[in-house]
Image 1 (cartoon, rainbow, N blue to C red):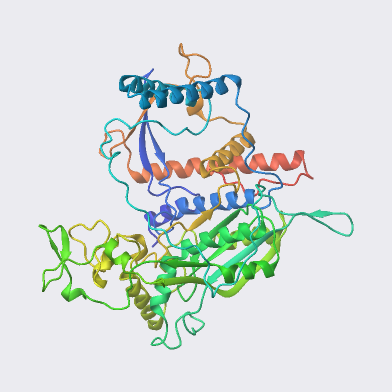
Image 2 (image 1 turned 120 degrees about the vertical axis):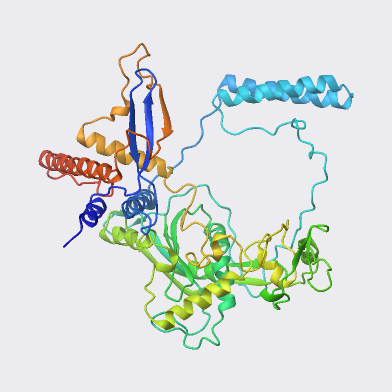
Length: 548
């Protein structure tokens, strides 16, 4: 016999009801009326909450769709400052001049008064509606480290490697919109690009992603490439903008291949030749200037120990402190410890906006966003499990940053070392089995993609639904009080406790939310049908919207 609990969970998943809602108590400070509101947990992974993960995936699809084929700049130019704002800047210039004059004359009382006046003027500049801030003057109060000597920044040559091909370097224009092309019939096209970047090979693999010869498969280089893959992608887009001569915008997702190496799919606004893309990919690299890790000096059974007197890790036999991070950097030679590069395989294809192909590629780009990295591909055979465990074992001991505890394994103290550090137990996400080296963001969006944040896209979705249904949010309405028109109701929000007497059981709340969602979906379908009857030839441009 089927279980009612399973049926309830299936209905919640079907109608998009969060199964782990967050309870918030909303109290109207005017009337004293209190109510408990269930908010979605906001999870982005299916193993935590499938409805919320599905909603987050659709929101990312909407973000990708709105920015991929834009024909105008997403961010307008800033307005010109007003006369009042210009006068504030002029007044600050006079204050800075007088402060420097007083400092040269050793009039310290006058210096402190002018610094206080400049701080008040900076606040007035912000309140006048200007973005950003000017460089503060003087030493902040309570800052005892302002007079301390600053650490010397290490500078290495930016000269390109001799084994990397050269690229054209153009002045980057501020435009973010791609080129337009005119057909023979006079029709104007403005295509964009779908791009896939992969890492180099580490050895031959089978169709299931496992190596043909595990003994010769380069697991070490695969682990280092996975850890530094985000930096390699950043370098690629930097080179692409310089070589193309315009500010390229992109929306991308990082996911594992069957061989468990990361690769990235990008929706790029605009187009460039495939030959130039291949040249940029071949010329892109990322050098890691860290101490060498060729030999393991301290295995797990003979690890360095922490000396509280020296406040450093010491050799377990000689009690001599290990070289510090700065000393280890001084001993680096002329070659980096690792160089990350892309593989020769580059896939690029042109896409027109509003086509079925564009929608299909958006779905392909976001298909693994709701899955954990280690569950993107099925691990069914012992050979696949062995490959996964060996790759993860290599990632456990691969240093991820200067502060990583794995440096103790190679005879170097981590930067800012502290007690209770041990190799193989770094808490960074790149070492976890569920990430497999992809500990950073899974979604990569450039700053000028759509001109909106995820919160803006979510607000647009809710506004579209409310406009279609002709309803308003009851929480936005102002109660009949003495408040001015348009003033929001004075309310207080707090977390509700599960043992509060007015909190119904979780199953009752889920049933109530399912009923509300069924009614909302029926109303939305009726409104869509009425809209189609009124405008039968209207192209429904809201297919990518998500009923929040």
